[in-house]
Image (tube, rainbow, N blue to C red; front, side):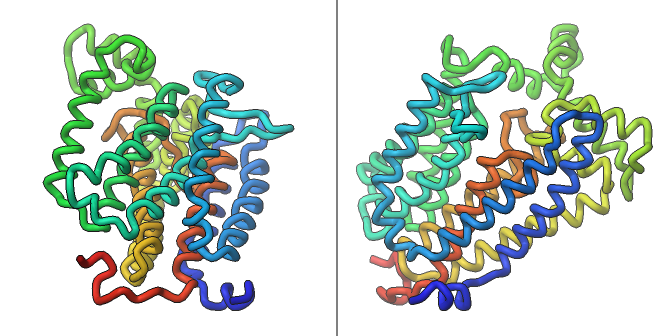
Length: 378
C-alpha cells in the first residue's frame, strides 16, 4: 500500500481534533506568556509542526513493523532513561537530555515505547489469564517506571500503570487478578512513602498537602501555606474566570495567572479557565471527551490483536493524562506533574502525543487479519 493510499484510508477525525486542541493550547500558552520574557507560544508552534509531521511519518509505516521492532525500541528507551540519570538537566529534577539547542525527555517517549512492547507481548499470548502470565508484563512496566521515579518524576511513572492494566483488560485478563495487583501496588506505594530516599521531600509534601487540605490544625495550615501555593493560585484562577471568563486586563484573574507556577505546562488548565470561564472549560472538556471517544471507537473496530492493543494503550495514555492533569490543578488529586495532551507547553510531550496518535492511525489503516468473531477468544 502506497503512502497516498494510506492517507486516503486513514481516519482523520482524531488528528483534526488534536490539531484543534493544539491551536487552542497555543492561544492559552500565549496568555500564560504575558509578562514573561520567554516566547513559549512560538516555541510550542514550532514543536506542533514537528509533532504533526512526525505523526504523519508514523502513519506511513505499517504498524506490524513497529510492533516487531518494539523490543529494540523498548531497550533503546531504557538506555535513554539510564542515560538521563547521569547527564540529565532540569531545575528540580534531571529529566532532560540536551541535544544541541533542544532538550529531549526520554520518559515521555518511553510511554509510547511501552505501548508498543506490551502490544507485541500480549497480542497472541494466553498466559496473562493466569498469575504466571502477568509476571512479564508487570516487569516490563515496572522497570521503566522505577527508572522514571528515580529522576524523580512521579507523575510520568504513574502513567505507565493505566497503559498496562487497560491493555491487559482488553486482552481478557481476569478482573480479580488485575484488582489484586492494583491493590498490592497501592499498598506498596503507601509503604514506600515511608522508606527514606524513595520520594523526594517536596513530593511527600505535595501528597501531605493534598491529604490535609481540609484540615484545621496548625500543622495542617502551615503545610498548606508552604506547599499549596501553586494549587491555591490555580484554584483562584479557575474561580476568577466566572461564567464566561475574565478580560485580559482584569486585575484579580491576571494577577492569579501571573503568579501561578508552571502556568504554561502542568497548570495550563487554570490559565484557560481564567480566560474563558465555566462555559469555555465545558466546551474544552467536551472536545477532549470527543477526542477520547474517537480513539475508543477506533479500538472497538479493530480485530487484529496487536492493532487493538496499540489502540487501547494510546487511549489509556491520553485518558489518564487528561483526567490527572485536570483533577490535580483543581485540588481533586495531588500535584504530581502531568501535562495536558496537545495543550501544555513542552516539546517532548507534544511530539510524543502526535507519535502516539500516528501509531493509532496506522493501526486503523492496515487491513485487519480476521482470527474469528472475537480477536481474543480462546
